[in-house]
Image (tube, rainbow, N blue to C red):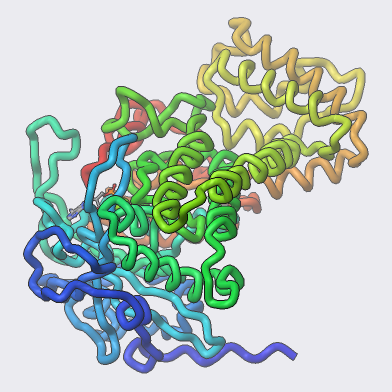
Length: 536
Ligand code: AMP
Ligand code: MG
């Protein structure tokens, strides 16, 4: 019999631990002065209080994971704002480094993230609560340790949406506005302005990134690196500690497979992370650090929402699988500092491409509602490639296209016009059907219909399978932008409504049509909708 879930408790009654702090070497200094921190995995810090914290959202599912009561109490709000450190919490900022946009950037670290505690649930699970935007730490460099409402809200909405979409991610418990304004130059064009500040509380089993290992490897600090590897394996991959010794190739292969699963999830739902630096790559394969991310509207593999990356487009949609592999190679190099013979690590890196080779075709088959088989692999790969070039011929909304493809009648003898009908809603140019731009798509549809008729699955099965792989609701950039405007005005209801819709992204419900609508014209060039900078 399943055990009943534990009754939710107020924050101060939860069971806290801090194994990262008690097991790993820490920074002996305790001031918040910015500095290089050597031979340590973290610095103990105290969050900086906010002047007028207000709870704007509390996510019940995440509270339930923590066995935390959702009753709003002054203690809860103060703790989630960084104004109160509850007994048993040992707040810290972690030390990491990373490769940013392809270059080694040295020490980075939690410049505005502070882990408050590890919550130990009645089931023995451990989850970290981490505040983002609660003030400076030794890793803040020249920045203020704060976060603005718009980026905090974007992180809250998107991490929860990703979870419900079935893509591995860190979670978000709460959004608190601080009552303090923060100065940001959104477009980096010399026009800084004050914006409302906010704090998000994120939740994950750990926030350890590739960069936490890289920093010690780069400094040749083998002892600290080894300690971190031991800790990570003991806490998160215990089966990879064999007789007390770390199975490093096993560790790398596991991280590689998880990363592959995450990236294939992104590709399935049309998510562009935007800043895939190695300090933003989770060791658990979770989507982490939601910054200038975006959702594909018109299907375009070259699209990136990040204006900071507009030149090289390193982190464009279609490049994400390759960048993940590049990042894993940097992680492998960090582990390589611990061994004499690096060939087992080099071999383990192959787990990434192996996993991708299985997952990518399966994901496309699911999106197209086809039964994948080795005999048809080549044919289906050709079908997918042809689709991508047909979609490039006229601006076509990715989410609506795949969702409505399930409604296409694939029976023989159906006219091309009738076959196209359900898909017209996905076209951004209403003249496209008459301009000839949709001809490649129409030709592709005939090829697809023929392949689908020939499939082992029935039309009903095809449709059901597709509707489990192709969401109807994703946090489109313009939808979130509208919610940010409402919450900034003091109206929190649109945020609650959006989050509610995003709880069931595969279930189309009447009355929610507005949340499935493609990007309106006004949003095409608006900062925050189609373009985002790293300013957050
Ligand atoms: P990102 O690529 O946005 O995840 O951030 C890169 C680095 O900059 C991380 O080490 C962050 O902690 C740090 N950072 C970003 N914004 C701020 C800020 N407002 N205050 C302090 N540190 C920041
Ligand atoms: Mg980051």
